[in-house]
Length: 319
Image 1: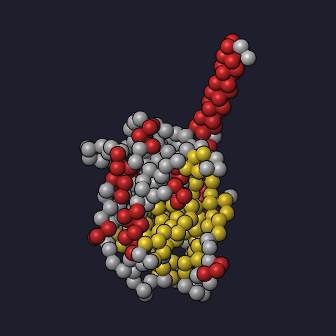
Image 2: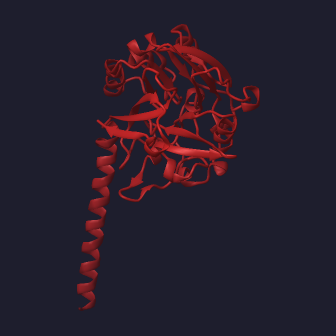
Image 3: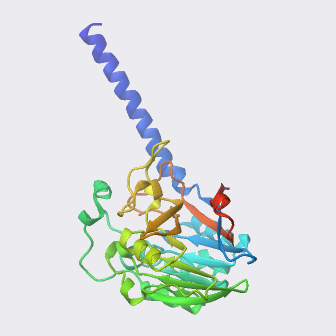
């Protein structure tokens, strides 16, 4: 082949690659980022004979005031009739997002609920180099100034509705006749977690003890599992946000391995194990409004009685 032929082939290949790349970016920005989905898992963690408990896990809305499609979609989740709502933070992306967020939650606020905060409940997002997302979490920089989002207004709204604040705190709820103990931490990603303030072995009198945090850093997961928590819920990762089909996520934005970036998995520490659910969440930063091979999601976890170890693997369904 002549030099001119090779050059023509190279230009044609580059054009094809560029077109495919542009199509992927367009899909990620225009379609998938708004293609919300509900995931369902059955989790055998309750005592024998207990009634099932439906837990709606919502995380990482990063809500802007005019995101009406997201607001309507979250509001419609009340039709699932969950018994309990767990919100693992990063609700806000704008100072005026609290009232739209409450509108999104709507009837869900009438149900028993617990919540923790993420960094984007304290600090509004700012433009930054997208490549920073690929850096290890300890290399990422956080704003040195004080919080600039109305997190106390959000806290009051949730607690006034009856939801329990689990930011470095504990609570107990009665749900379907069961005693559920909860322990939570503030966001480990910005080192606001203070597990030492809530540490201690789970109470065997509880029917189930649940650990709740925003970012699933290993130090917090180890603390929960070491104290005997059989179930831990988290968010933060966005499921990797940009994933490679078949291969999966490239990053988790914390020190969790990519095999556990979203969904159910098992976390072990010092001979103990817990079921962990990491939500891929419902939003993104307004400065990086794309998702690829990682749809925005909420999750309905149906907690059921423990069964024999041979058949106790959690089951998943996506709708």
